[in-house]
Image (cartoon, rainbow, N blue to C red):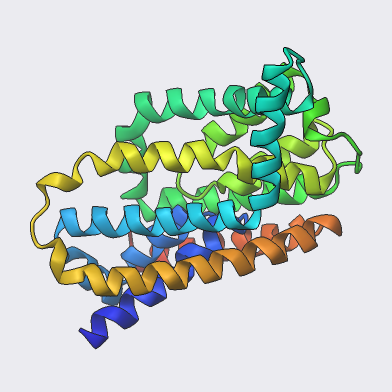
Length: 280
């Protein structure tokens, strides 16, 4: 049991950090599974158990977003209700509509191309190449002129534009936070606002994906065997996610996305060299 807890906590730390840092959590976990030592562990794990664990860690990440942006979320909900009650189409209503519009492309792409994405995850080489592409995107985004537009000041087409970046991030190796922040910067949002919109629009996406996968949980046997390790891993993921969120917002203010870009390019190239060496 102690061994399982340690392994789950390691995965929780990786999930918590890479979920919000623009370095692709799915890409890192996919490459991790390609390492012989970890592959032997994952391959011996029941698919249902892996699904349960995956949903649990994403739930922990979702909780981190809600806690981190708690005051913004409460103010947005109260403001929207107040504006609707007064029949006043104000900034809060516009913000909510922007989030809904931005969520549409990812929902459509996820439903239509989920099987292709799962096939891509099975190819470490594709993931490595996409990590390099992710790094190039971040470095380019870091060169954009800093602007001061607020989220509620966007046009609807700009929200949809950011949503397209989120849809592309369904590919393993392309960071959801990185691509949507890059899209937000291209739409003229100030860096902190781009981060805020990126993470708030992640709430329906993560929640929706979790609900979609959770339908399969009822048919899984043996979940009780990993409940305790999973709960511990969720706590670890939650803490790591909160810390990574705080650090990322600080780095966004200084517009240091290029550091993450160099990292993903480096890990992508190193992975390709290793895979090429093994003849994969």
